Length: 418
Image 1 (cartoon, one colour):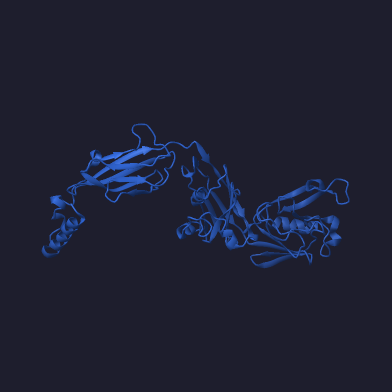
Image 2 (tube, rainbow, N blue to C red):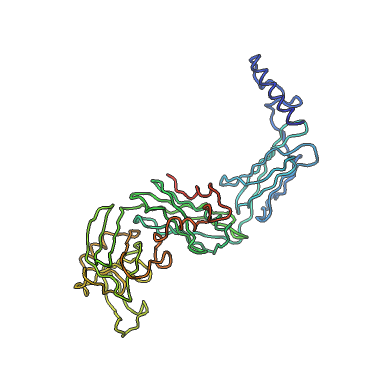
């Protein structure tokens, strides 16, 4: 029966109810079928290429539901996995076949509901269930840093157990990794390399924010035969906005808390040939005592520049060994000259105060030094030295950075209130 005839029947029912006050359910459906009739079992009307019994569906084969013979058609198919995610598919215009168009999730259970109608328009339904094979190659993701309270400059990191280089694979990973904050802020992932992503907001995290990172990657196809594994979530709290600005030209460090100056400290920074790196750095950790030896940074023992010193109240800002620390041996140069091998030195009392005041994630910025710019990724967290526009191009989802990106993809990576 044509769509035109069925539409005419429905309109007739509506008019009858309006004129007589009778319930529309009293009207008959196409060819006299009551509209409230229970759907018949469509098992004999369809064929399904899914597994039977205890067998599991292969991950590299699409699902297909076909109408048998010519005595009816498929009107709708929904396939939902155990996590409630719908499997995309296409239904032929004549209702003869439905075929999945997205990869199956590994190691999960699907429920497939098939709606049909016969030649007279009577509705049928059939529900099918099956399980999928486990993945042979699994991608694990580990978020960083450890749970705790951090400064406003702390990026979120995601370390992958296997490299992902294709655009489609990276997009699949990124769609599954979510960062949310309260209050909500705009942010984005940046692919540092094939095995590492960093996430930061457009501006520093708000003071007091709660930040969570989650991953719904389990069973998701990443690329080829690589599928996602379970991801342990991460929760962080953001503390006060602590910023230390070191002016290498004036030999002063200004420390602010939530925008107000709380201390100004005389310092020394790197001398010519060892100038301190310019730019924004993030506190990586704190060590009460560090033995600093010149040989660890390529200065030969016994040379005029060699050193081997016990250093206290050492706050690390690069992996290569740049610290803010106590330097009692150069106290006469604090506030007057740059004499260090790249670190920011100060008196023991000032270093102790700084050590107690800052935490990992706090921001340390160096200006007016003749040193090289801070490396954005290779030597600590230099993420904030990348402009926001450039940062956005490091995402596999944002429009302009990925050939298949859409505005909806862009919205997915903006944190929302929890």
